[in-house]
Length: 131
Image 1 (cartoon, rainbow, N blue to C red):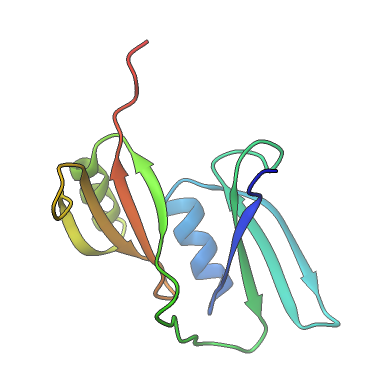
Image 2: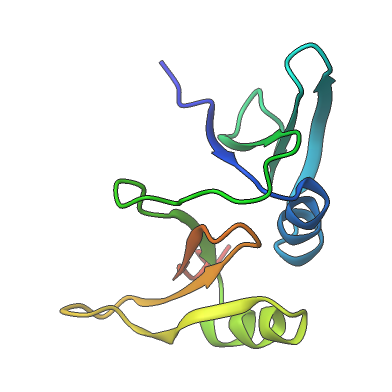
């Protein structure tokens, strides 16, 4: 078994694609409109679906707002330098909701950002292993 994707509903597909692709550096892997169901699916990720877990952005036509709810937590992305990454994202207009620093009751540097729909994304500093 393998985890394929996580699906989140987005209120504005263009803004969400800009956020995930242009600001976070993911690639748009595929996008398909379903006129009969009045929705669009767009899959984004850092690698192909055959060997990476990706994010499915579901846009229901005409829906402009979602209640995030209390059950969903966040997506998590590994970064090399949490401070540099947050500074660069902030310059690109990304909302940083928790400044970078050690996690509470721990030492791992983390930060939180928010996508255009309001989903939280945790950034976790994980230095790449030296070759």
